[in-house]
Image 1 (cartoon, rainbow, N blue to C red):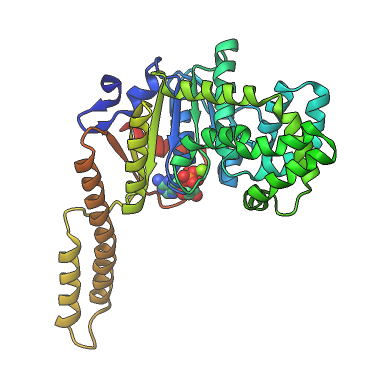
Image 2: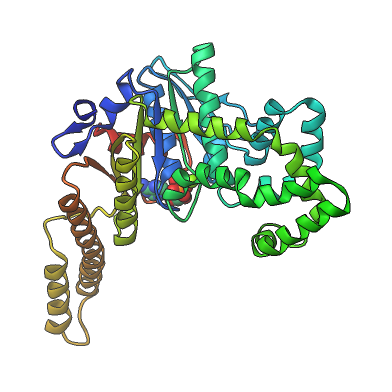
Length: 390
Ligand SMILES: Nc1ncnc2c1ncn2[C@@H]1O[C@H](COP(=O)(O)OP(=O)(O)O)[C@@H](O)[C@H]1O
Ligand SMILES: [Mg+2]
């Protein structure tokens, strides 16, 4: 791992993406830091450097989605127009969580049972609102894409974006949470009456219900318990399938063909989150390639410190009387603007230095904040250029 991901303290994204041994790249991080942007930029760059790439995005902003041709929501990858000039190819898809859940059900149950489950209001509630479903389904889809890559040879690199969770850890915790939900006590209690049937069964069931009422109401609001029973009875046959797949995907994430890239904003909270996440990956023996610090403030004259610019602005303001020249006022304004930007840049630099001091082994790369949102291939190429130092 080390050889292919580090040069000095820098994360060598170019080496990571061109290494044929890299088959999966997972972009993680807290909400809003630039995971989707980074995933798309890396996918595009890799495709334009000879890789055959599929990017799984989760929640692309609308304009970015349009640029990637993600207008059809059919849960399958499609070629991105205008990408892949370097001999590779780029396909992209946007995760449809509900559809992916349905596919899993269809794969694991008989057609009859599947239809029963899909029509069940409880299933519909769980499949679209259970906390962690999106994370779980992202992993499920990753597993599917990776398997398809092997089966068809259509892709040699899968780049995965992760859901807009509050915490990056949700992505790693989701399968376990869904797993324990599916075969935990809650489900066993719910299953009892369906199996026992009749009024006697209902009595057992009622006891169970009072024990889990709070969980129930959190999940369902006022859904009918009858729905739960039929749902659970039907799901019962599939528990093994769900758990097995979660375990398989988990194993895939530990594989040396996988590289995690943690994306963070150059701010204390985001870097702290990145730090937790790095710790978790380490515990789980999952391969962390490095950190992308996104949206770094760049200033036009980096050698002019914020404090000096501010002092000069004050001096200008003091030195001249009420009928000062327009040029002087303008200069003062520019100095103050520079001071504000430089202050941000200096603060970010301190935060990044602190992270590096705490994690000297984690290589990182910085991506400057663009003046506008990244919503097209040109914008993605610019981000990729920063990522790869090109
Ligand atoms: N380096 C950057 N410069 C300017 N805008 C950026 C940059 N990176 C991301 N953005 C913008 O920030 C917003 C959030 O980025 P996104 O990739 O969707 O974050 P996430 O997937 O982590 O929630 C988007 O509007 C995106 O265009
Ligand atoms: Mg996103």
